[in-house]
Amino acid sequence: MDVTKKPDAYGELIEPTTVRIKRLLPGPVERIWAYLTDSELRSKWLAAGVMEMKVGAPVELVWRNGELNDPPSPRPEGFPEEQRMQSRITELDPLRKLSIAWTNSGDVTFELEPKGSGVLLTVTHRRLPDRSTLLKVSAGWHMHLDVLVARVSDQEPAPFWAGWARLHKEYDGRLPAE
Image 1 (spheres, rainbow, N blue to C red):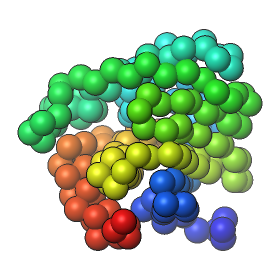
Image 2 (image 1 turned 180 degrees about the vertical axis):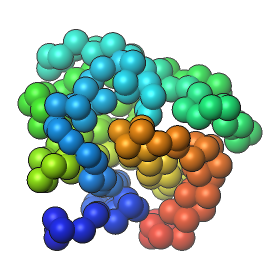
Image 3 (image 1 turned 60 degrees about the horizontal axis):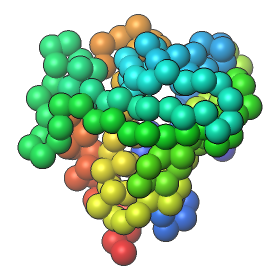
């Protein structure tokens, strides 16, 4: 990857059931690590949930995507106001890598790499069970990372659910059908 330019905002299918998405964020790496591991900071862009920083520790992630914006973003039909998932930490290398097993939808790895005054965040979601989940997850990660970029840049993020709906359609056209 050419580190002089930002990574493509869209996720890429790197294996049939694995999507990878990258964002270049303002550093330092300690700040971005806190947005991954601190429940209060993580709730501002992804999901709340206290994490004990050790391999094997359970984590309950709590999504309230409509609350990522002020005023709250109206959610699409069929999506709950809140979603909870029991997970566990499977790999931990502080300030560099965090992997979490996600119930019924594979596992997610967050990798941080300092790039000058910035930090390259790479999110890899493996073992997605089907194309429908792949499309939802790809649009979700894309939008959640857009919210993270806005938050760490002291900007108001775009409405989550409107962006997710648009991106879901775009990923349907971008990612190969089964």
